[in-house]
Image (spheres, helix red, strand yellow):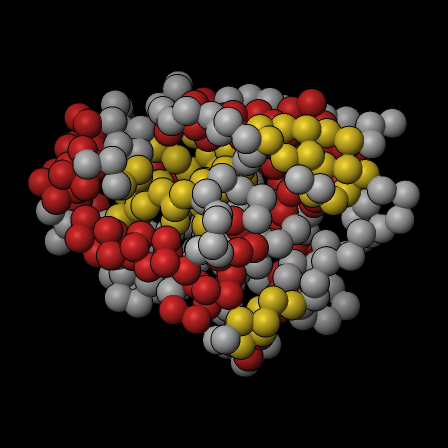
Length: 347
Ligand code: DOR
Ligand code: ZN
């Protein structure tokens, strides 16, 4: 039995840090284990321009614990008014590593997102030209489409036509949740990748809804049925270069999760690496954890791998994690996998 595993320090290719008191409270949770993270731009108002991304990056750096070497990698929020020249300048300066597309209305703070895809064609063509990846929240927003089908319908009706229109565009399917997502990611060449979250490897829709509603398991895209979770596990643990860790750790204060209209998001920054070690061990794939969490992402984003390492140790006794992170914005519940976790990050 493996009791200890040393890997390159991981990166998180999809992270929500928010701003202000929440940022200050949650940032140390990611900076503890991760070297870098791709920071989602869905603030209120969203991070649309290069200047806004620079200011947000400055606020993140100012909120970092002293001595931390964590690096935030910035994204821009794509709107129908986004200026291709501004995107190109922000990418050329090295500040911005991707552009995020939220279909308007798909999720938290997505009302400024894209409703008419023809309006963003020029930006997408510019991104294809300069090799800047487009990160996609892949769900349709048509209220007549069942919420459990929204990812598969997005792939057929939006993603595939978009990639046919601009074949050289580099695309990341964010937080895939279905076997259709896995299959579509596998159908592409090296300009297509997909992130997978920690929580979608652990929960299916029963965890949210059976035996009482569990608001802390509610996120978007919502967890699907078991066969999809198994497809995601097979993909994440396969070692295939197209699958990247993107936790989508998305903090909301408990008062807004435990609410009549609860916010979407699972907060996994604190215990992601031990949970992944648990999952990869169950799949007899601990040897592929480094690829998923530390090698595939930099390869896709054309960045160097991290020099540092972390060591995960498996203990005889279950390890404890804080139930909540107490931020000045309010308490944030840490994702509870519902099983004992014996892995712990030691360094
Ligand atoms: O669960 C989610 N939470 N999914 C998203 O797409 C957005 C995120 C958030 O910002 O809270
Ligand atoms: Zn997200």
